[in-house]
Length: 156
Image 1: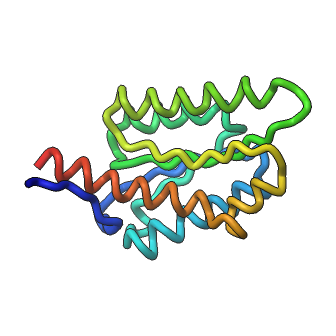
Image 2: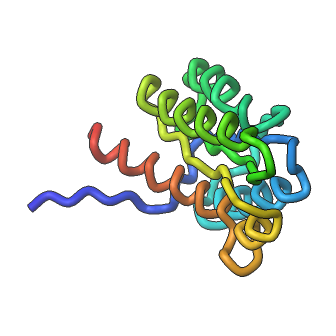
């Protein structure tokens, strides 16, 4: 039986992180978690990490797509926070962001880790950005690292 699994170490990997400025007070924690995972667990050097800031979650897919087209990165981590409010704005942002990022990953055949919080409240977002529920930025970076190794194992 042949089993393919990826490890979290990818010292030579080049990783881009795209972060939304909207809800930055939460996204800064997601970014810190992602950087911690890449450097400490993945052993990725700071020189191999690029951080790109965009206005909000809706803009993530376009920026991720442009980075993917450069073919300079082994994976991209997308980080943002979309909090449900009293209007339909949440639906107009969260769904296109999710489907757009998925489309980039498939079309470009590149791991795109989904570190976008979609929560009902600020409290839920805070819990997922480094308190009770862990740090989803850290988790997304680990996913990116593992997928780099899975893809490498499949191709080799």
